[in-house]
Image 1 (tube, rainbow, N blue to C red):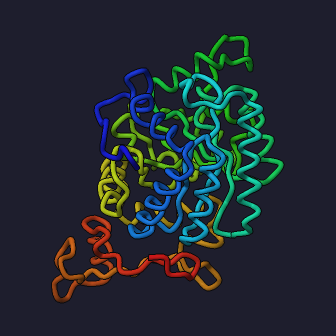
Image 2: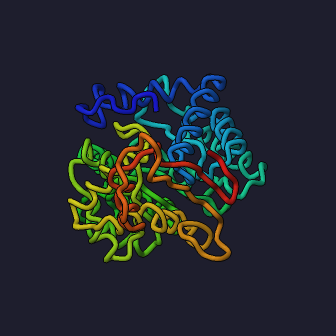
Image 3: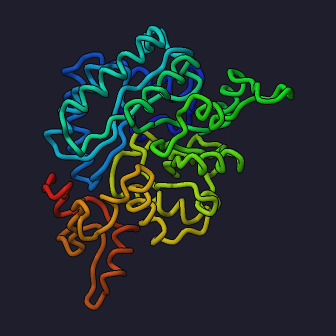
Length: 359
């Protein structure tokens, strides 16, 4: 969250890119667990106040800091997917796992710690940063770990032209004699990381073949329209993906040049709608029930029904000094649409996760 709204003019990769300029130095600072606790406490508290009942956390390489996040989440009450970020190549000297073995050992340590908390809200995951920063040994090791322990898998996929080109340089396809290159989806699949518990951010450069492969494996795409706009080099075709059976969720990526806020779901909804003729109802579904399905949680969260966990926001559209005016005679459905398009955290009166009021 330290650099939300900063560096919108930078490419993703390279010495002068957003990762090298902002992300890697900020993440490296989490070696200090006291600093990690301060930042994670602020982050989780803010996300809850802004109505985020379930979050998919992209952490850092530090096992201690990842455990700190788990502790903060336990106390705060938010539902979350989390684990240790793994990266052992093509990374800064000051911010990288020393080897695949070290990275895998740290990832397992974090998974075991999360499981030891015995909290149904906390879902352990393996997190390869993205293909260029992970050796084949590391990718395959994470795939084996995920299969052995039934873990979620969280990463990035085909998010920009420079990233896709980097992957192609590293992974020449051996499936045919053509001398071609493997796509991100093919590399993840070969390593056992394309599963029904996998969710990948972006996907702007996915081919139709990639989408079909992901749909066959039951994997999901976390659609980040604002982030894609800044450095995705293209649009993710939500309608096409859904028509092919690919699970899609609409998300607000906190580090993606915008702050975390329900208000920032508004341009996300607008971007998704404008690009591929999605209605506001479609966007709401993708951000709730679609998100639950993408995480394999459709039987417990994502909509209101008997037997489901009570994850909910109490919205007060008439709050004094609110983001929009409510006039007499407006129907509830119209007010919901107005909240999605014009609302912000001023309209959120209460936040519940699994029946517990968290904000």
